Length: 103
Image (cartoon, rainbow, N blue to C red; front, side, top):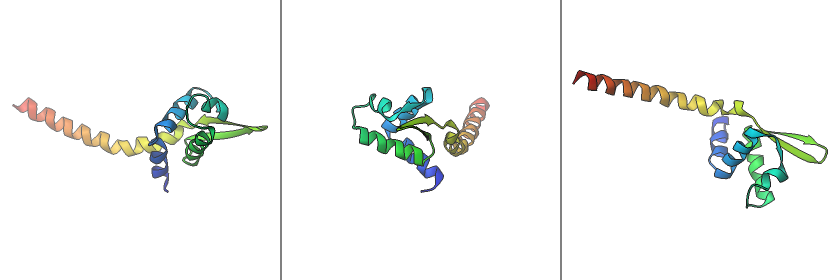
């Protein structure tokens, strides 16, 4: 899966988006993350693996524990993809404005 697809695929799941929000506030271990969900710890680990593979989160091992943190720079893939639509809508809205002002 290419970089863009892996990021969008990772962001497609609500639980993974919630994990990202939590990790944007603080670095957390797997158990602390899992405590915020009703799904199983293995399911949380799977979500974290997907987020890590897409490079949206980073993992650091300290002893037996694994700590995760959000990698905000990885969202550049999303922002770059959205730039096209930003330009598209700017152009369309400017045309609409011009049309309305000419009436």
